[in-house]
Figure 1: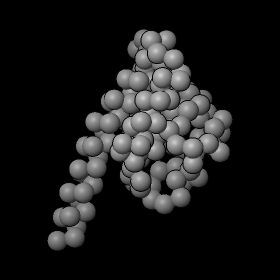
Figure 2: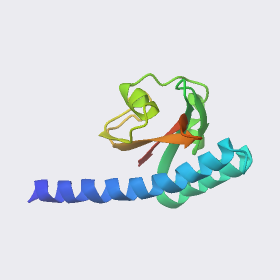
Figure 3: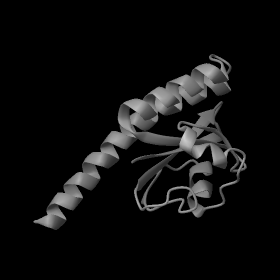
Length: 131
């Protein structure tokens, strides 16, 4: 019975995170295409963080973190992520993983990574997780 519950919980969280990811992705895409300011994008991702307890990291195509949703993540600003998941996302794939980015998230959790595509090219990536 516990395996069934775990699988159900995992699938529900995955679906929820993917749906949130499309909303986050649009906000970042609007920033990268200069439709909104960086301040507006940050306000939107911080609101998403507060409403759903989701931590969000945005990285450039070299893996450097240039935005985050929570002040508890401010020490990571400007740091480079080199995990294999980053390359998969920059290759255009959506990555769903338990226990990713151990140097950032201290406990294992479900993480989703999505590419940010502008003009048919991956320009950035967003990684997020529920706490």
